[in-house]
Image (cartoon, rainbow, N blue to C red):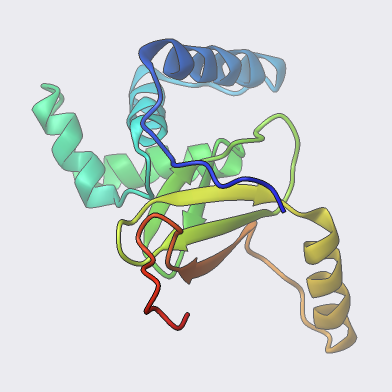
Length: 161
């Protein structure tokens, strides 16, 4: 069993590395990572948990950018399509993709108490999900599966699940 790592906010250097990788990825794909899209991506990357669009809007305003909700949603839609973020429908929130260089399904482990989330890449799990869904004529549309629970740092010995 892998060791559990407490999710911490990234250092400025780590954030800049991810932004540089996003810039490079967008250049390779000939898609435009505008300053606003890049700023929204940076805000998402800096979080140690999924973040909602309205929370991002507040952060943008605090940073001196006057933006409306549709502007933030358009930026998030671009980032989703580019594979730079995942949307977590259960929380109506977004988190940075930890493997944006290739298309994949992310398994998101999300703590109900502290709100932190961790992305795991589990192609074998998604292969089974797509196989069983396909047998029912169902096509899986989401790129992330969110599993909520209690992280080891929030869980106490008396928790049953």
